Length: 418
Image (cartoon, rainbow, N blue to C red; front, side, top):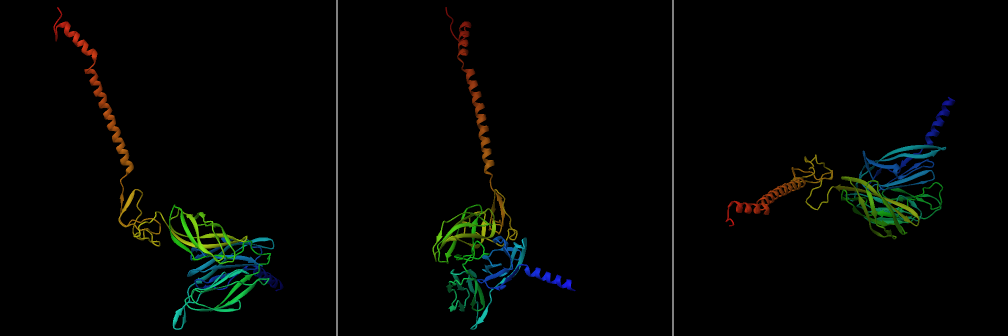
């Protein structure tokens, strides 16, 4: 009995020592934030590639960030659209008693609007909090994304935010990390980190100065051709920042504008991209920047559609969700042209709904003409040679002299000398 108790206690201690994940809330509205943490973890080797978001089996993209403080990994993601999603954190390496271990986490969450009956009307109340954790002195932005007034109590202030209105705060330094409660149609926790040196903090700090004006980028591009994307950004901080790098794992980044953003400045960043893919392209741009030697990064999801040729005719139909087979069409081979309607389908190519007509082979016709000219030249050369030969035989001078001498000798064709 005693040994059984000891084994049970050892098992409990081992289980309790494992890292644990928790989410503040699993049911969100578009515009709210998914906030969570992984606790009881020592010396994690965490990177952005450990995080992935899925909608069913399809990988999707959310703007997210994380930081490691005092044996806890804090993370958040902006829920920008409705759906049922899964957060996967895979192959998270960490040390335990000098041994390298790994852990995987799967957490499901739902994003959907919630209608509230108020004053005989159905309305939505959505409070956007960006970012859900930050360092003391940085800007915290609260914005009403719903269609009804909301009451907000934060940092000792009470405010009423009408739809589309926003309010900002700069949390004070308290010499330690703390949680600020924000009260509204529901309660929110905001984590405020001290700027003092923390032994277990990450090197790259989640200083969210730079923010995109749109939740994601969309548009049509031409495969195999350099394209310019214009990303509208705003500096929400109080420091000047410089764009240091733009990258993507989903498209090639050829170059970007050498831009700097002053405090509160809003403008476009030009990013030149390239892809040889066709059809739907789901991915993200990672924009890195510097602000007084602090590194920051903003990830902007994109949903692009790549076509094989530039579309100049506005009447061309585009079916991004339907295949050529769905429309009962076919792709014309090289050297053929569609005799009729040819919309662009989700493959990114023109789908012929009628017959494909073979074009005249210019190469074959050109080579035939060349052979005809060569034959004519050859026959002309032979004719000229025969003509010259015949003319020489009839008109040689020695032949005329012999004929005249023979005539005089035999009395042919003239008088003989006496």
